[in-house]
Length: 268
Length: 302
Image (cartoon, rainbow over all chains, first blue to last red; front, side, top):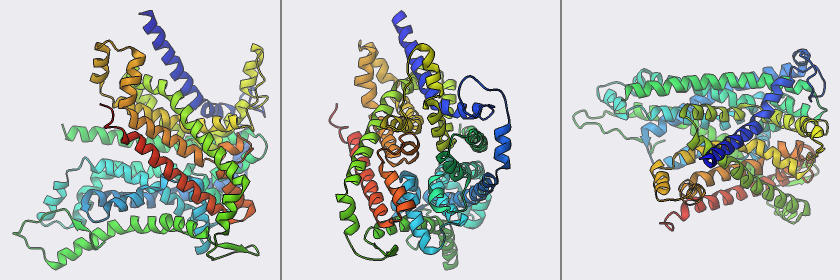
């Protein structure tokens, strides 16, 4: 019996250590962003907001933040529309080459971002998009649309395809069924995917680094700051970025959680 | 989208007018075409362009369309490329192995030893790192392991250290683990949760020990998920740029560092494209091998 206890304790300790390894960098970012000392180490140097003040006063960080918000906003709307469209097509139609169709839409996240970045840069350089926020947005939509598609497709799995067919047969147009039935049903997933794709874009640094040129987004600014000396300002930016992303992800989670519960209620 | 036909079967009582058919076609095209056009234009075409560019040449600092194999022969014969390839492949493989081994006991605990509520919470927590600026996490890790960092500050009173892992392959692997461990724990947990509980109970009832149950019952039946998790770890590590640069000090450089250097400073895009295409081919080969490994021998074991 004591051996079983020991085994259990060993497993729990190991799990704790793994989670510590995963979360220590995140927690320390937040903690040391409030540290008065210049170099983040023990002992604690006292509470201070000076790094946040420095960050907010930094014009390049401000520009990066504004750029990131613009790109994330545009990306979330376009990627969610494309993701919804692709999910609906996958749900509604059967046609020759459908596997290829879904693969083309879904594959981008499996390609290393460094390669996507180079491909985007060389291609967008040809058509005059590189160095623009539009160019960054275009790349981020490619990367984020599959996530939107996955979220909406999961939701559509709970919608009986016969409902739409019945409405069509009763004389409703496809347009009125999609706006009256399908989109309202998918609304939680659509909103969740707006938040999630915004978070994907807001955190993406590699494509943006290759493509953005002088129009740096915030993560690209962070990457540039990492090349310099140790600066607690990076912790302050990291904590801010973390707060924004987590707000988006938690909002998406809440929407999806409600989504799941409701679908269980309607289908006992 | 002319080949798109709806799955609906209209009753013969209501014959479809040609205008209704046109409406439905326009409708299908409205939803079907934008995702396809976007991903073709901004995903497939750029990747195709990347492949085409490997045959271009750079004449007096200008990109010129060409049909030369010079970039391929240059890269494939370059010592620095071969070293970087072997090094990157080896470190990514090591990371996949280490991450799988480190994650397994944690995934096992999550899947079998914790309450469902605790498990749900921890699974949600494992999603958090994906949305927490990876460069910032690497920066934190760099601070931890720096000479005056927390790790050495904690080791000193114990009479240990100082340890120095920064700017070495060890540092790179630590960074790769920061990147891959959350995903590997997550995927392994899902894989283990899908192992039928009855199978495990049957093994125990038949007197099979804990460790033997894990090795002969749980691991084989969760094999697909475990292999997929390791494959993802390999793919992520193989393409990562941040860890080898900031924790490994790009000494020696990995393939992604070669690409970034060629593009950002060397300005030799065709050579960078060759490296990128070789990386894609490698990843396709690794993924198909791993999937064959995961699915292939299913019938062999009774």
